[in-house]
Each structure stands twice: as C-alpha cells, then as structure tokens.
Length: 283
Length: 183
Image 1 (tube, rainbow over the protein chains, first blue to last red):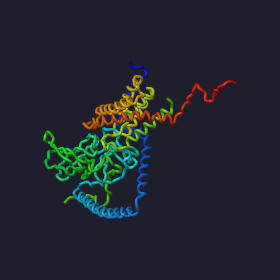
Image 2: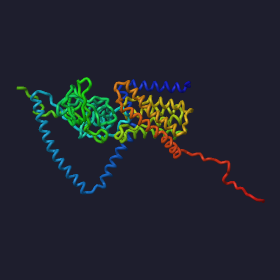
Image 3: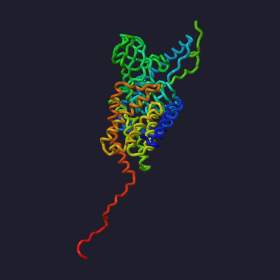
Image 4: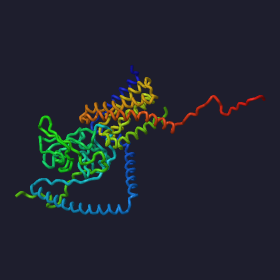
C-alpha cells in the first residue's frame, strides 16, 4: 500500500500538472520561455563554437580557391543585381496597375536572416528554434524559407528566440498547388516525423494530370504564405478510395534535416509615395 | 547522498536536454530523435529518495517542454509516473546489475514517449502518431536501455572525481613492525 509521503507526492504532482495544462496559452507560453531561458547560455556557446569552427575551416583554404570563389560570387552578384532591377521594375508596374484598378497596394516581403539554434527533441512535432524574437520583429505566422523553398511558419515567439513549425507539422498546414497543372490542394498538418523531407499533398478534386516530377508551390490561399514559393516535387500519386481527391507524396525542396540558416519573411507596407500607390479613378 | 551528487545530477540533466536539441544526425539517419531522459530517471529513482526523484522528474519534464513544441507541462506526468514506479519498487530491483539497468531504461524509453503521446492526443493539437512511430518507440527503448548503464557509470565516475573519498582504514597498521627472534 502507498505510504503517506507517497500519496502526498502523487497529489502534489497531479495538482501541479493539472494547473500547468489548464493555464491560459499566453501564460503557459511565458512560463515556457522563462523556463527555457536557462538554456540560452548553452545556445550562445553552441553558436559561438559553430562560428569558430567555420572560421577555422576557412584557414587552410588555398588563396587561389578563395580568389576563384570571390570571382564566382562577383559574377553571381552582378547577375542578381540585374534580376533585382527587373524585379523592382515589375513590382513598380504591378503596384501602378493595382492602383489603377483601385486595388489596395500589396506590401513587400522583407527577408531577415535567422540561425537555427535547436531542433525538436520529441518525436511528435516537426519544429526548430531560431535566434529571432520579438526584439527583431518576429510575430506568429511569419513565413520561414530558405533559398531552396518553404520551411514553415513561426508558431511561438519569445524575446530573443522563436519556434518554427515546419511544413507538415500539426501547426503548419500549407495551401499549395501544382505549378504545371494549377491544381489546388493542401499539405495538412500532423504528418509523420520519420522522414522530415517527405509530406503528403492532397488535391481539392481528383486530377489524373498530376504526375511525378511536377513542382508544388504555395498557392497564396490562406493568407499566411506568399504565392509561388517552391514547396517540393511530386514523387508519386494515388487516388483516394473515395475517388474524390488525389494524394501525392512530395519531397520538400528545402532540406529540413540540415537547416542552419533560414529567412523570415516580413510583410512590410510599401512607402506611401507618389503615383505608384495613389489610386486613380477608373475610366 | 550529498549536495554535490545532486548538483551533478542536475547539471547532467541540463546538458542532456540541451544536447538532445543539437544532434540531428540520428534523426537524419533513422528518423528518431535523441531522448535519454527516461534513462536518467532510472538513475535518479534507484539512487535517491522519493522527494529528490520527484523534483528531478518535474524539472526534467519542464526543461524538456521548454525546448519542445509540446504544451508546457505535458512531459512532467509520464516522466514522474515512471520514476515514481521505479523508486517505490527500488527495493525489489537488482539495481547494481547491468541487465536490470538495461531493461529499466528500455522500459522507460518505450513507455514514457507512449504515455506522452496519449496525453497529447487529449489536447487540441494532435501529435504525429503513425505506423512509423512504433519504430521510433523501439529505437528509443533500445537507446535508453544502452544509455542507462552508461549513466550509472558516468555518475559513479563523476562522484569519484568530484567527491571527497573516505580513506579506507585497515586493522593492520602499516607502521607496525614485527620483530622476530629473541631480544
């Protein structure tokens, strides 16, 4: 039989757990951040160590290799500058046309670099922690991407760190379409964590035109993710038993297992200048 | 049990929770995250009293949840329940035996995540519980089974290194001289 001390301990822990699980989400989030602050020195140390290792690995590189790399980057920089000029012109034109149609101006997506400092230690979620918090302008639902494609969205924010729910996590469903066929669908949350690079995409209606190798991009529906961010490539498809929808296995474009740096997208309103944003009367 | 032993135990727990968030290699290779807290619970339950075991499991659960996407406090109950059962039955267990430590660690590695998933199913966000989850649970059981005896060895080593060691006294005095023969 249980002794008195054991009963006391059982009751105390039971009350503590019930209290914690019934806290309002905002209070629970604050407590979580306060508790997690104890790991901040270690996160800092790990970041410093990684940075040191990076610098140490540059040291033995021969000068000729460095010069070649600088040349390559210079060329890429010139190419990107040109592309940026074209993109700016297209954006200005788009804004002018929207203004002429009387549509509100669309904001610009600004990218902020963040580093992944921790990975999910449990088997239930797909998430990472980044060193980007409210002090840097983080907010819940901001999209997170890499140069390869979509990563996820910010699911919880703290002062200096935020949690990112990765594509396929219970907290990160994504509205996406097949770029080639324009079939709309979605990647639902709560998918297996066994292979972080694989998710299932389900179409809204059955479509035999969806084939392996086609590209899945964000559709912009739902309002969280901007349109046309690459999500991944179709590996294979199957028609659901009901025959109403098609499900495709998608290999994600971004390698979620090897994330080190990510970009957080912030929608910022365009500067309220001039003719670009001033709506003109319709003819 | 002394203060240093307790401090060492919490420092190892702190480092273990942190390291679990840093190594993605195992997840990349076989799809299983690193989680060794059940093995540490076995050590705490078999070497400390009920109060310290309870404190250890509660702190472990809170620290784990603070770096995870789980709701704050979810991991406390499974870790505590497991540590409580082991602690209250510790007089029946062959705690010095490696195979007992292995099986206790393996049991913790399997049941603690399973109970956590059960509690999470009751919440608003359903965890990713698929067929692959059974594979993850088996690997976690094996991982904790292996880590548990290693944890005992590590703590023994740490205690030997940092703790004051009592000098063993013999009934035979080393400075005693036996003189044979007649005087």
